[in-house]
Length: 172
Image (tube, rainbow, N blue to C red; front, side):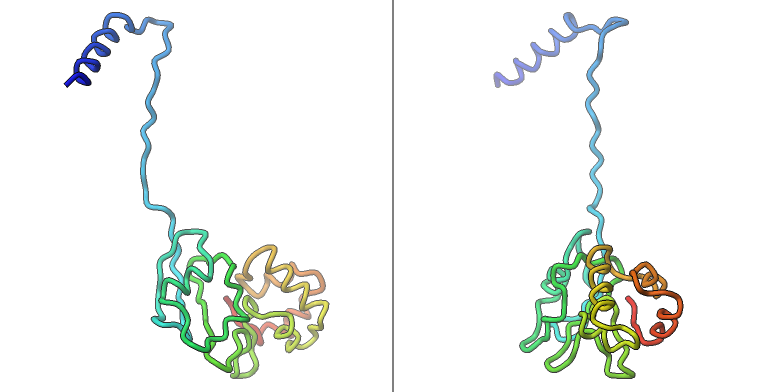
């Protein structure tokens, strides 16, 4: 019961001793507004336990998204996935089944530009080892390509090169 006594004495002392005058500083107690942490929604598909949409905290990684759907199924080809990549809202993460490639689509040989490694990128016309490495390095440094025109920021890719590969790439 003594804590109430201490509080009462402190209040009374504050009334008599601490009356703010014109020049006194009155401490302000900040009000902290709590809100839900920012989230992203990603679609995890392919060779995983329970494919579908998952909500993750902003800053989550591909590995977190895969874990949120129960992990990969036996034989999944994760070697082509960047498990450390930060996911973005609306992203689709495709985990290939045994024998599939993460970056190259069988229909027409289209390349998933945001998942392709340098070897996959070399399947595009006019993209050799040096340019393929530049694309991967640029993507690793700046994040995923949002539109085909983002490739113009990669040294060595101009309008004509982009026009020659535009229909052969898949985004996001």
